[in-house]
Length: 109
Image (cartoon, rainbow, N blue to C red):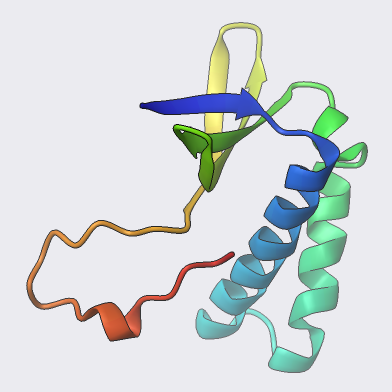
């Protein structure tokens, strides 16, 4: 059974490390940042967005569990009844298309 559980500080450290790396890579691939500055810029952006880490007000950070095993992370930002999805990071991917080879896909943690 898949469940969402609020992140603790250890889970947040795993999440933020992976999120920063992924965000930096996306910005480099899009041509917005150069490789040398990408990690420091991504760290600064996440520090601005989540100044109090997993306890930042109006941010909801969850660990995705399959039974007791962590398979990913989910984050959203919400005010009152409106939430905006920020991130879903899944470490184990399901293959829908035969054209995607498992060798090209790697878990993030």
